[in-house]
Amino acid sequence: MDARNFIYGQWVPAVDGQTAKSINPGNLNDTVGTYQDSTEADVEQAVQAAREAAKPWRKLSGAERGAFLYKTADIMEERLDDIAETAAREMGKTLAETKGETLRGIAILRYYAGEGLRKNGDVIPASDAKALMYTTRVPLGVVAVITPWNFPIAIPLWKTAPAIIYGNTVVLKPASETAVTCAKVVACFEAAGLPSGVLNFITGSGPKVGQSLVEHHGVNAITFTGSNTTGKKIGQTALARGAKYQLEMGGKNPVIVAADADIEQAVDATLSGAFKSTGQKCTATSRAFVDRAVYSTFKKLLLEKTKEIVVGDSLDAKTWMGPLASQNQLANCLAYIEKGLSEKATLLTGGHAIDQEKGSFIEPTIFECRDHHSSIAQEEIFGPVLALFEVDGVEEALRLANDVPYGLSASIFTKDIANMLAFIEDMDAGLIRVNAESAGVELQAPFGGMKQSSSHSREQGEAAKEFFTATKTVFVKA
Image (tube, helix red, strand yellow):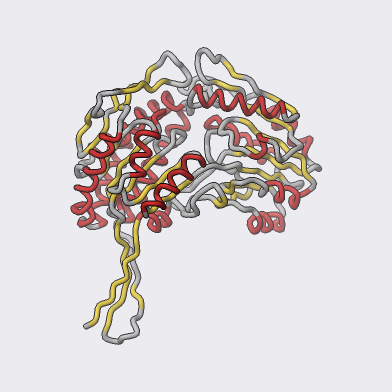
């Protein structure tokens, strides 16, 4: 597929005609498609299109806007297999996972379509008996949506759908690694008849396209998911020019296994949290704190099940874990494994690339650690690398679990209500999971992190309204 930019309802090449290839990370000889290597000139066209469409779009009723989202969901459902297969080839997640992500995207569209008929304000008693006072929610204007490659369907939709239903227009810039997949998602909006300029799609590098979007004075708000380094730069730039911004960034997510835990349940959830999607989730499990009383049993079963994991082509039904998303991701992951070895962590299993000439494959890797201030215990790796710690009880586990700059998600396995309550109260994370893996987000619930994991706003569910709208207070006197 030749993924062109989508500007004011038309698929167009980049102004300077430059393109780049999207390569299957599991088969380096497989070109998934091409995408536009856009520049500031393309950003200018996309923003102007969004600005032209902003006023007529905000004038529609919520129900009218919602009808377009319902239709987009139906079209995406018809194209589910094609979108999921493209995502599996382009990003490396297994086909089962990308089908699940596509279904989730469809559900997101339908959820936010319903938002068009929900309330958008409150009546407040006025001090004057002859006056009416109320609040209403109004759109921000043009929203720049900048998304990562690890969820090429769900994340663009959980940002774009609420932005649109609340009356904003959008310029969507996906990660280059998954530009073709995202183009197929945008094509569903086009097929649904979304008015020209409401959703614009532009591809290219972060420094050229992403930075231009963030700096553009025609962009009223920026919602971003990605690395902490990039997120902080976006926040600083947006703050300097008074644009609203929302940042979802890194995680170093722990699982705590108490002495009374169901060990098999805890092991299965730890494996899924750490190694599904090849560990490339911001909510992935990267540290496990296991009570000394059950440590040996947990470790033995964990290693046995890890060695059964089938690594391979994302389209093969037998594959449990696909490749990393790129050769750069593979190099980064291998570098962290070398750091772990140099910092005297004990490599229990994995640690090596597989068929590196064919693709970005790596073994699921587990370290046994004692130094909680080591690189693999403190820094986000974004790959299938788990640091395992033996602890004396839940209190020590909580202290260590909180001893990182991040606070996105966390889980505990226990049957003890006191342990559960202590974890819920004391764990510094935006997403708390009890007897469930750390990776798992419900589309109808607020999502976001604490500390350096986010800008402290929340995405998804009704919480999205807080970012994508502004409150207007109205006072009417008879």
